[in-house]
Length: 311
Image (tube, rainbow, N blue to C red; front, side, top):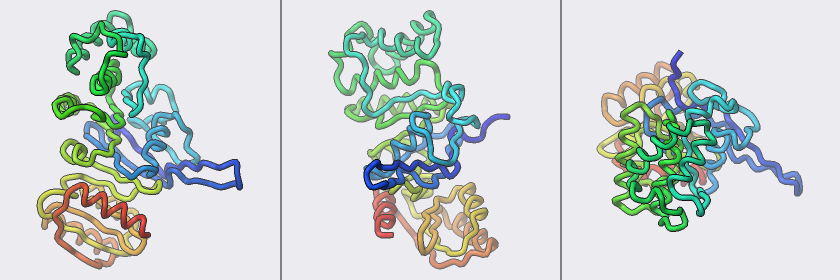
């Protein structure tokens, strides 16, 4: 059976316990996120929100305290589940004595690729990321932007179905950012799922289709960017909405802002607003407010994280 989600977590949680005074820090709390196959997904949040911990649990670099995570339907803790994953960390460190081609060959050999395939793929990717003439140059001579391009090539060597990128355009000039967006768009066109962890809201807004915002380890918002930003949208406030109805409304494409006093649902059109209100009422929810909105992703981010802090 083909998996519906590239990434799916259920009540994922990570608690760090301090050796001093027995203090507990909940880095990620009760996190349920679904990333459909073949989409461009952005993970956002302030510093310390839990984004890096979430990615580490997904890649099994950190074990969760509780909950579960799957990649294409398989338990993320299984080595086989991670074979279709390409990963570019934010602060990658490649051996500077290697050439670009040598580095790609070394890392792809670790993943089990055959030598002939490694050489062919390395040449293809160096050209793709704009480093065709730099393959035989030692990495110590690469600029920060060139290292990002090389890191992307490394993540793509084994033709992954899920690409996890941590700040992929950090240190890259505007031309380079455009080139990287073009490469990633081509990949999603062939069915690859792109998962980006970034602080660059404008990049996420212009590139991603779905977004999730974490704050203090909790999921503060998730949904389609098209229903959150740009144009005239609608936000509906409601109370007493059952969890089953929340999931049904999320599947319909609405973005959800969970709140202590009231849950809010963001949609793009008047028709979607009416449909969402009908669903909420049918589930026994009480409509508290309906307002028109016209916002950027930065507006949404600030509003979401500020309200979460206040709560």
